Image 1 (cartoon, rainbow, N blue to C red):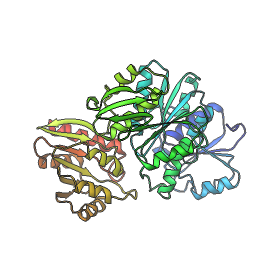
Image 2 (image 1 turned 180 degrees about the vertical axis):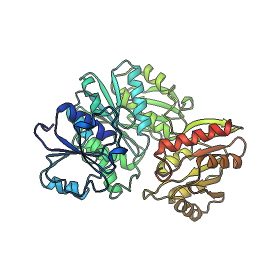
Image 3 (image 1 turned 30 degrees about the horizontal axis):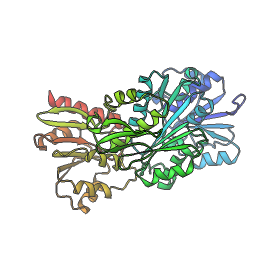
Image 4 (image 1 turned 135 degrees about the vertical axis):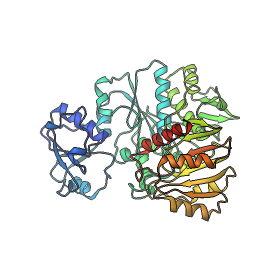
Length: 455
């Protein structure tokens, strides 16, 4: 890590990672400025003495050049190749981030997980397996504690599980000891220049691995499988279609083979996680955790008791013989397709949200090819875009546009139009920011609306 003493430092963004960096810098007694487009009254200062921080805030916060700072710590919301960041770098400024700083300072072994979807589920399952084995382990990042706050608790004998996004990986120059690569399609094209940049960002999870490191890679898709060519680590695979050196599904049973010995983990039918896509997440977690030396009995007991995460294909409740599922975390077509394939019951599907430049052609074809989806309710900004994809795919069911209506009305309408024994699934395939604070807020409002419906 670069010495911070006497340096002029800028922190871009005062969200979760920005606050993590600020708390770290305050302990290090470093002189720094925080840049954020929000006004001071909109910022959350819990746990931080704001009197010790200098701010540059408001809509013109980047009006003046970032040139002149020795180090800039970029939060994930800031595009890495923003012209002012690039200009500062050309003038000698070091561009860093909370995650880069964490990798520099972390004494523990890191298991990093990336992919378009499934990161949170896989990372949490790995964490639970290691925790149940008695290892000292921490889950950090989007679904755990802030990275830098953990540093005082870490030693060479501890483990840290990280969910790593393309925003964080885009300029990484270090890779985790164990890298887990799930399927990679396309996402965040409102942030990335194109799909190539998005995929290339993900490659950094394996690109800097050394001999002695380990890579666990999804074998079933070309993009992640090609990552194996980029790493010096020993490579293992997981698959739900092929017998591989690692973990795989065959004849509805999960097998593990990382040491030349095939171990039967158990039947996929006994998993509490719903959906075929979750077989991939389970296999990834089984393979990665087994490489830390954990007993198979601990892996088995943890995997078959794991119920998944909130807002990820979560069973909310049953109302009048109709089941309600909350899959609000599905902010792109890929997880929505996976959710759709998880059900054979008659279904009402709630889709839509804010537009982040995604293509819905494939989703339209999938929905049109399913006989059990009788009604699609469209909400939010991308409603017309999704409707166009459905019409182009000659969808024969009903389409109901509800704009930016209240969730209570949307849920009530879905309930009234779904046959008994059917499923109401919110799996939006879009971001949430046109109608909600975030995907959690969207999922929470859906769950509250179901609760009101039942009462």
